[in-house]
View 1: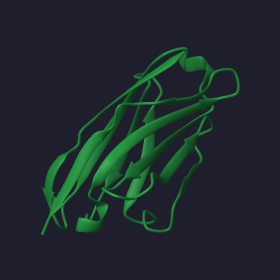
View 2 (view 1 turned 90 degrees about the vertical axis):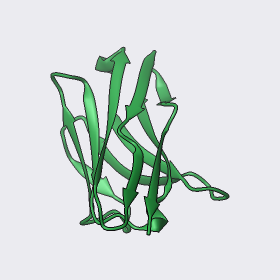
View 3 (view 1 turned 135 degrees about the horizontal axis):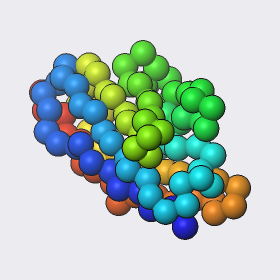
View 4 (view 1 turned 60 degrees about the horizontal axis):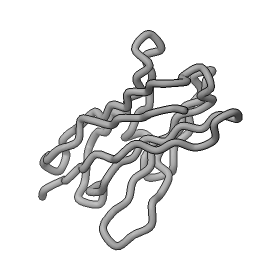
Amino acid sequence: QVQLVESGGGLVEAGGSLTLSCAVSGATFTVDRIGWYRQAPGKLREFVAVIMRDGSASYIDFAEGRFFISKDNAKDTYYLQMNNLTRDDTAVYYCNSYGFKNGDSWGQGTQVTVSS
């Protein structure tokens, strides 16, 4: 089993930055990739970014160049740095882990609100 706890959300003005954290515990050695997703009010949950075990990363087009995913292996913590935020980035952001052995796990989410 893998447990995920997100933090770092909050209220930020448009154009500002936030860094979200995802602390991973439990069977961390089974994790093959960590992804960030978001869900805005009235919309489906959507993919934002993913980082693989080898450190390679991928982003959805709206995140490319503005958001950066990274990890600290020593702390089993993953980050999503978000820059130049707009009101369209307002959503609950979720951390997801996937591993062949344990499948998917989700955190509880952290709210990001961007004001104009």
